Amino acid sequence: MVKNKHKNKKTKHAKKIQKKVLKRKAKNKKHKSVVLKISARGGSALGGKKISVKQKKKVKVKIKRRKKIKSKKKRVTILSLGNIQPSRGRILALIISIIFMTTGMVFTSVFNIINDQSGKVAGASTEVKIESKLEKGIKKMVKGYPIEKMAPYIAKKDPQTAAFLVAIAKKESNWGKRRPVLNGEDCYNYWGFRLKAERMGSGGHTCFDSPKEAVDAVANRLDELIQEEKINSPNEMVVWKCGYGCQDAEKDKSELKWIKDVGYYYNEVERYL
Image (cartoon, rainbow, N blue to C red; front, side, top):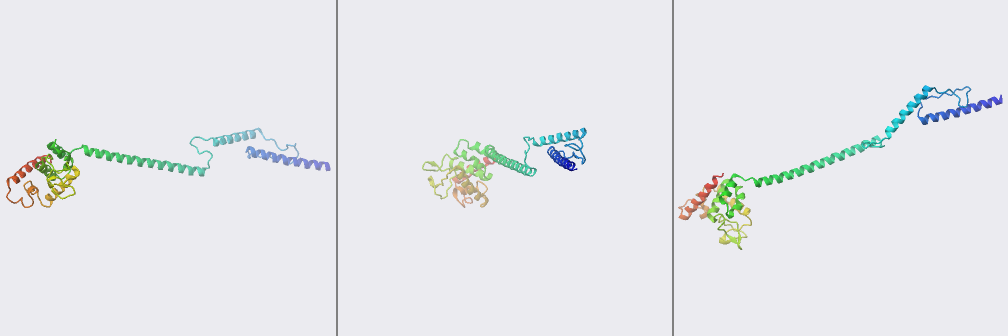
């Protein structure tokens, strides 16, 4: 009896160990779905019921599927995020998309700036190249005279002012051939204009630093006479020669000649208006 009890204890202990071993194997192979039943009665050291062939096949199929899933997960393609956790992967994807967006915006703004600058340059060059009818007419009239370089500035003034600028310059200086100078340099004063300034040329005439400055100064004075004094004809503009009041007085020969000559070139410019 004692011997039998001792044997039974050994067999039970062996069965427990075998059961633990089988469970560990089941865990390692990840096929927990296979339930091993160890019989409580009798059996060999491996005891329990045998696994059928069908169950073995099912287990093998499941193991193969799991291996395939593992291998797919381990594969890292060029566009994948590798083994990064999904939450961190989303953050990384968001950061990359923000970088691409900002880069695109920067390139777009730079491209627009370059286009604007090129458009401005193109517009400026177009303005210089395209000549108005008035400018073409003035250049044709004064071709070969010193005043020719002032034609673009004259053409930009009010048409009536431009006509007086051309006509008076012809009478007063023959379009710049008879002109005041300072230290042998051209004063760009082709209208007999006298206004006290730091630089005064021969004959008490004002000296200008550039053709544009000369045209602007004389044009401003003519605008005042036309708009404020209502002087709108060469006959009235004789005040440029003899001063205020002389336009209503009896004219001498020089004044009449001035009116006639200025009137002729004034009318010539009007043809291009």
